[in-house]
Length: 267
Length: 222
Image 1 (cartoon, rainbow over the protein chains, first blue to last red):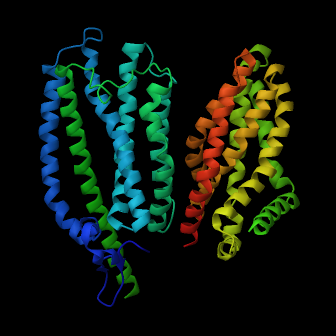
Image 2 (tube, each protein chain N blue to C red):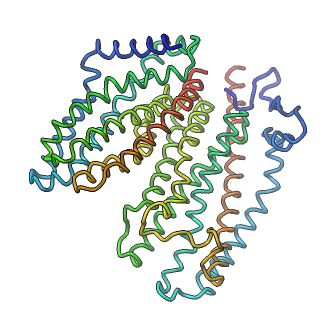
């Protein structure tokens, strides 16, 4: 068991990682490897992210649903974009964070990074599912079909399966530390899919439109639509940080409860 | 190092051959799965000829996946894997040796069985070279990618089902390009681009998999 809790005479103690003594530029990185310090910091951050999510989501939805113009071709159904595009961005952002956190966890045995990867997976899976469903709802009026097997849609579906595989593998072991490490390797292997999703619209001739916001030569989308889109993306990002902090805090508390239970059992 | 590598490979092949039916299971599954399709879709030759490439590739992919569980599981359970990991042979080389043995006992028989099944499925005769080439390039990659999955699920609950969930999404590119190569041959388009992509995937897997699968094995043995 390598989850930062060790048994001693005095019960479970949260031990500083050896790397903590290195000092220098690794300081911040190692500082929050200590779950207790992370708990102190995250307790302060959670209300800020919660507040930012509520404010940005309210503003974003107002702009997206009322204040922005309907599209000259698509009419009112263009408003699906304000949920679909941020959800798709977050689906990739969450997978990238999961892969980076897994790498940090695997290389430095950083306990908070491992928990972050574990906590990110269900959130990312939900964003991916939301992107697929809203895309389908948008596709029906625009393309005349709920689903096409083009490269962008297929690669996002694969991303969804990768999230499911990660969560299944993570839960498949009796030893939770083993599950986290095995799933971490899977997260890194599955990362090859993220650039494929990003460039699928350029490499293949897809029905899905190419990038219109993050591209060389600036966005091709009008600012009346770009601003609500970016506000919604900000809201989704703050929501992610809010939920992931709450989930990591829950993980840390759960691992402490496990430690206490073990202490009771072993007397 | 080379002698150790060959010894691991020889041992795995010998075990598979002596267990006989166990290693043939993948081919038997491949044959039965392919035979089910004409019964399910209907025996019209045009329909079958159109979907034969897809059936063959999907069935080959599933058959390759079914045999993966045996790749490390038995050695993990009886402790052989720990002994091999302690030997001077790098674990990466052990992975390559075991994957090569796995391909010899499952991948090669699949390739050998595929032309017969292609006849049953009314595949266009023009597509046969492409079918063999695509399977020859695909099956080693399937064994390699599968080795990562097989190493990850060692000691997991319900490892077999889990393995399918992990490995099948990663098999999708293989399936897409293999079917594209066979179909291109049938329609008279150039086959080479698809085969080159398959070869590229194989090269990437040869480079990256031993490293990843060895890391997965190390954390399973830790």
